Every structure is written in C-alpha cells, then in structure tokens.
Amino acid sequence: MVKVNYDVGFKATSNTSSTKVIAGENSGMILRAFVHTSCFVPLVFVVEAITCVKALQFVKDMGFKHLVLEGDSQMVIKWISNSVDYSSVTAYINDTMSLISQFLVCKVKHTLRDGNRAAHQLAKEAFDREESLF
Image (tube, rainbow, N blue to C red):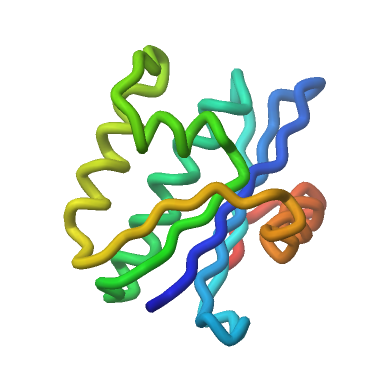
C-alpha cells in the first residue's frame, strides 16, 4: 500500500500557491514526488481541493490500486467524508470522489502538519522555483 501526502503553501499577498505531493512506502522511502507553483489562486481551500485531485491522479497514473491519502486540510477531508455543501469546490470534490472509486482501497486521513513534514518542506522550497518538478 502506498502512502500519499499532499500539502499546499499559499501566499495571499501575491495569490500564489505551491502544490506538493509525495508518494512513498510505509517504511518512509519516497517513490515519487512533485511540486508545482501556480499564480492567480483566489483562496487556499480551493488549492487544497485541487491538490487532493492532483494527488489521486498522480498515484493512479503510477498504477497503484491501494493507498492511504493524507492531507492537513481538515476542511477537504470533511468534504470528502461527508455530504456537505462545498459550493465553490464542488467540481473538485466530485472529481476526488470519482478518482477514489477507481482504487481497490483508498483510506483518506487527516494529518497534522508534523505528520506531513516532508510535503510541508517541499512547500517552502516550491516557492523558490518557477517550474514544476517531478
């Protein structure tokens, strides 16, 4: 089973975000990772929802069928777990649910920032880059 951590960095002053996704084994070995910086991002929770979709697509493209998806956004995890009105991110949550249904096993968990340390570190580094890295 692969463990996928995703995290987002957001600078409200410039409306930029950095997206980080790390796919690894339970032993802690990193299999693959990517960072991506975006401009003109209106709200952090929108980026969190988009990043969740990107993380699932990333792992699906790698061919994994069993995963644990971890993120530090309680709001996104709640949207995925419950039927609530998420208005401006409805399409992203629907995409997330569609992707989840394509895995044999997909456990979605909230993690504190400490538990998402590697992805958070990539968040800091991503703002220094002007291109995506895989």
